[in-house]
Image 1 (cartoon, helix red, strand yellow):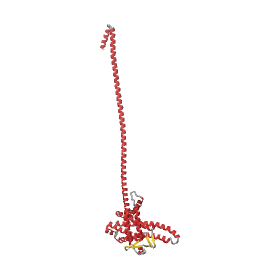
Image 2: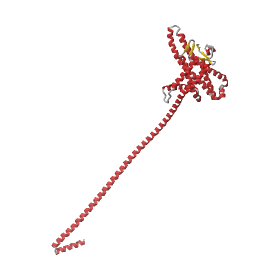
Image 3: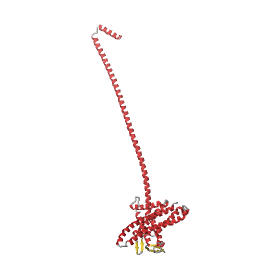
Length: 170
Length: 237
């Protein structure tokens, strides 16, 4: 193949016009494709890339937030459990104390009442004895009067005086 | 080699087959891209997935060969359109070949060295531009004498060989594919009547499938090497 056949077939004419046409064609194609296809697609790819980055960032932030929230909740739960135990034990001791106090009070009161009853009984007994003694004295005086009124001989009178005097000596 | 329909306009020769093929394929690329990117959404739909996949693929070529971040951004569009355009032009000749009388009217434009050299030249000029933009004219010219000064002639020759290999590799692959397809269709099939036609049909199908593969690989190779050459210019050795 000679140089001439390589470039110009058998027509013997080198077609430079084709080169110009290709360049024009290619230039127009570049501009058109850039405007209608390459540009929008590239923009969209960039936008998608940005969105993916944003999504990843926000996902990481969300996960962090959730983690802290979970930790907080766990701490609060532990706290409240502790509090509950505290409240329960407090209530238990309070109840025990109160119970003991009630029992002690009741004992005291019972003792008081018993004491009162004892003294009341003693008083009543004393009163009764005193009453009885007074009555006995009265009755005996009345009997004595009657006896004395009926017959009081000289001897008797003497005996009485003696007795009285004896009583004085005692 | 088939004769082409060459016409003259403003004193410049035009090859009708190349003009028609490239224009058709440019329109095809444009409408396909426009259709695929019709409804671009944040949640990708099926069409959008396709164009994003292609874009990802060409961006991958750019990123793996050009280290400079700024150049990457500018080359993304170039690589995408270049890949689509060359791929479509490679496939055109397999699908559609119009020949009226002795003259070709539609064929793969990339089966013509003029076409591939145009694109290779474009890459070459682009690599110069990026190199000068990065290092300045003086710095850029100094890079030819690096890393050791006696490599200067080799570096200069490399520019020419890069350009030639880039363009002729693509041309050779696509042209050979078309030649073989034509041979199977035009020479082998009618050579011994019905028998050879039966043999030729599956052969043609197999070769067409293989050519689709070659066309894709060559489009990929062309874009990759373009990026390699440009990438070499924007990195200091």
